[in-house]
Length: 487
Image (cartoon, rainbow, N blue to C red; front, side, top):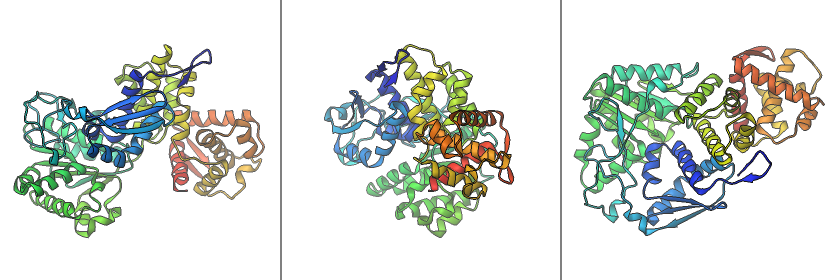
């Protein structure tokens, strides 16, 4: 629900909300998982108060409720500004919904295509093995384009990951294994798909497989039950390029880890290329054991960082262009400066702006963006209080407690104070007067001025004086927010 120009409240209709939720869910869980669990066999309905998720059987219901509830709630907040009541139900008629057939090879994985452009085949929600599968012929599965390395926005923080990806795509086996690690939605999957796409373009006919750790585990267990281990091993050990996403999924799965260990050994012994992605470095994957961990560390372990301000601004512009959406520069600046977590958050913001514009029949402007994205901005970081922000700023920049309350106007104090006010506007619901009062009994106009100054620093990519050191403003904000998340 958003506020129209005359002050009235306007609700999105179900036809607008469901596609927007689908888009937000796709961003949250990834294309492959989305098609597997939220594709043709799953139906979303929204009546203004309750979001109903209908699935074909109890297996789907238990899996989605156990593994994707958090992502569903996040998608709702990003799209609707709040999370409605969730209702899960089984609708047996969805069992008969047409779905994509299982390919003869590399089911659910990236496949080599004979066309000029790289594409990827994905399997729809598969019926659990115990329930059987249909033998009726089905049309060829739809394909989608892979992400491209040329569209990965590296900025200054992710030049090494991009350069590494380009190297292994052009010269597979030279840098193996290559492992990307970082928090969710920083671009790891984009890099993996980009490597596959570039490798195909560089050498037609290359044998390559791209799948998630969840898929690897599922296919391995199916091979064990069906006595198909020799075929499984040929499929994954004899490729020139093996790419596995979400490596952390293997934690606690000892049998699958042993199979992965032998797969890794075979590929490295044959001097072929292994590319992996995880949410943390191998040294923090304690449940993997030393045998597997040391092998993962034997190549290049490459961190992928959240995008800096310049990168976020470029991502917003790129996403707007992809959606054929007219987003004025001041709105792009607002989105890039207020939503600092990851690219999916930026995508969700543009999705919401597009839906709001269509619902109100108005072009996107800054006033609309501030209203439509207000909840997203508040939820983009941890819920904090003004003393939490003061403590985090002082801890990060080595200031004594109480410094931000002083009347000192020197840059070593005034700059951290302005940054604290900016963070208070972003992360709390405190009024301007309350923020000003807390940080040295200043007026609300001082807080507004501080907010504009920090926005300007970010837009210009300036370095600022904080305590006794010079900082890049985007890096300074990221460090304080990391400190806030750590508590």
